[in-house]
Image 1 (cartoon, rainbow, N blue to C red):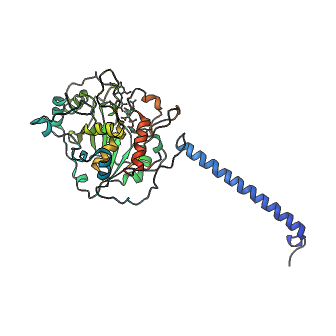
Image 2 (cartoon, rainbow, N blue to C red):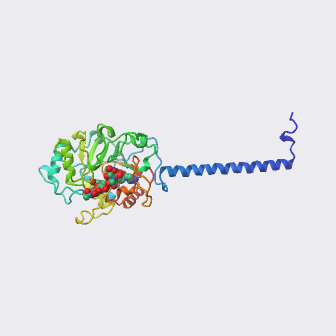
Length: 355
Ligand SMILES: CC(=O)N[C@H]1[C@H]([C@H](O)[C@H](O)CO)O[C@](OP(=O)(O)OC[C@H]2O[C@@H](n3ccc(N)nc3=O)[C@H](O)[C@@H]2O)(C(=O)O)C[C@@H]1O
Ligand SMILES: CC(=O)N[C@@H]1[C@@H](O)[C@H](O[C@@H]2O[C@H](CO)[C@H](O)[C@H](O)[C@H]2O)[C@@H](CO)O[C@H]1O
């Protein structure tokens, strides 16, 4: 039995009115929901970075990506030419001891004029590629840039799954593990960027790869490793005076990779007359070049600078500094962005973040 006054008593006109009323109410609800959704989406993209997002990244899977042996080599030969893979990744003592390998360029593109200092460093360090990398059937590598877009990315777990994780300069892992991971197979550095605690920010077997820009960089590493009198002059920023590392972890990057990154990726003139400022690739672009020669597959994360007009956007995932800090660094970041986009488009590298 239905009680009087219930909805069953309503006339057809009333029902029609009620129905219209309900439909318009649910319209409003839907509209409000869509609005909330748009606001959340806009907020999310802004919180990731103060700029538009180009969807130039590939979906991240929890499983290991398939790895095709020789794939990076094929891509590298298209970009850098056929013979670049024949170059050793790290400099070797034998090439500077009996036979002085003549180099066409001075640092950072060659070793011309720095051979004696280099010889002393090579005598106390090593050049081998560790067995753990050597023995891999297929080398999956990821190059982790220091860019702000890694912040809140939650990519740590994904990054840790790669066989080889390459990091740059003083990029920290401690406290940022969720976003950048904790595995570091290789870290590229130079004296001015060596301000990290090797024991905290690296793993016990991390290879510390020196990118030399000037002869003094060889001198610095020698004084640190042999505990000789430190020299303070000749650096644009005071390098560490004490650095607790095992010399067997140190490698010297073959400057050939700097040369081809400058020439083939950025078309930079190499070795300008002294009066003209020498432009150079960033350490990140250099690391991608190195990875294309060492690995079978190369993925990248944390690459990309804000647009030049975006003066307030912080550039690193770990500190608050802006593009202004890079004025005078000798980098052309817009040219580098074009080079990276080209590599993404041709499939030479894949991006875990957006670009
Ligand atoms: C003041 C200054 O000279 N800054 C330079 C710093 C600085 O020397 C070190 O951080 C040590 O403190 O180093 C550089 O670079 P930096 O150490 O900032 O970053 C390492 C690499 O990450 C990529 N990157 C970084 C930030 C960002 N928003 N997008 C990116 O793509 C770049 O490829 C970059 O190379 C360097 O060595 O290249 C280049 C920077 O110009
Ligand atoms: C001649 C000289 O020392 N120039 C310095 C640059 O090498 C240096 O750039 C920095 O030089 C580094 C090598 O030492 C890296 O290439 C780094 O990416 C780059 O930013 C800038 C930093 O603001 O200071 C100049 O005085």
